Amino acid sequence: MWTLDAWMLSARLAWGRPALRVASIAALSISIAVGLWFTAQVLPSAKANGTFAYHYNIYVGIDDLREWWWVFVLPGVWVGLTVADLLAAYGLYRTDDILARSLIILALLWSLPWSVALFYLTVINSV
Image 1 (cartoon, one colour):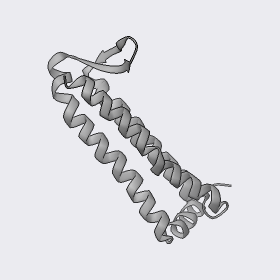
Image 2 (cartoon, rainbow, N blue to C red):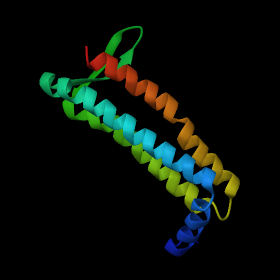
Image 3 (cartoon, rainbow, N blue to C red):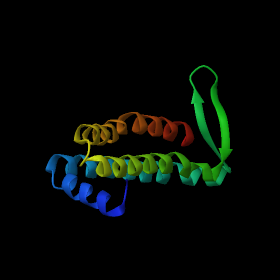
């Protein structure tokens, strides 16, 4: 049974592990920093043009144009998934520390493909 008290106990135990704390802070910091950088780079041109190239395919080029406010969707999804992952990891730590550690490592490792994807979307949208 999941209760707030059980989650808090598990989270306190996990937060007491320095490696988990550092990895969690790093994963969340990277997702927020790259998301803010992406938004700052792409938003001015997207608002000026009224569109945002949401998807780029190496074979056919830009194949999905969206409204300018879609600039916020990908960074928001990334930060949301990272937060959900970390909440699950901290809640599961007391009952399954290996799964919790794996989820925190996953949150840190998926920063690389997300960062690369947002970088290339920045290149496409700021030309």
